[in-house]
Amino acid sequence: MRGFVGLGGNRGARLAHLERGIRACRAAGWALNAVSSVWESPPAEGAAGGPFLNAVAEFDGPPTPEAWLATLQAAERAEGRRRIAPGESRTLDLDLLWIDGVERSSPELTVPHPRARMRPFVVFPWAEIAPELRPFRENGSLAECARNLRRAGGGALRRFELRLDALRPHAVAPAGKPPL
Image: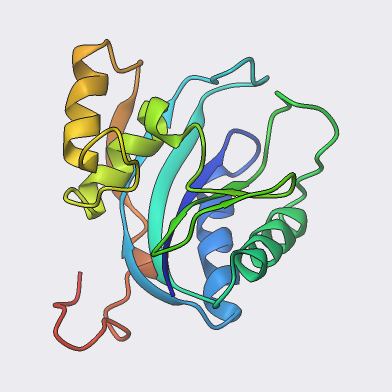
């Protein structure tokens, strides 16, 4: 099942935590299809600590949102993430943004992610790898959503030329899709 995961972190070896988050998903049997550039953003929504590194990855993963969530939370815990209080600094934050054909709202999980479309640090990297995707009914494509966020001020994000190249799926690109 195709889905997108937002990656972020603002504690410790930020880039290494993102890479290990992706590796944990691949170790769980998920196929990595694409990874955005790495973006740096100031803490949002009252989060503590310094700037975050952010990226978005596309995977083919398990058949249920609950299985996605279990893998993501296990990867966060492996990187030292403790969910003690909202707004805490994080070594690794993995958000399930969207899964093809799935809409779910429960106390544990909401898909599509309810605040993703309002977050430049999610939308900008996501639009890099899936500009035509329409994950939100009322907001058009991700490219349109990114343009709207830029017009509205878009936050103080900085795109790095740095990419998670060691994780690029050269050997695992699906048939009919060129390697990234």
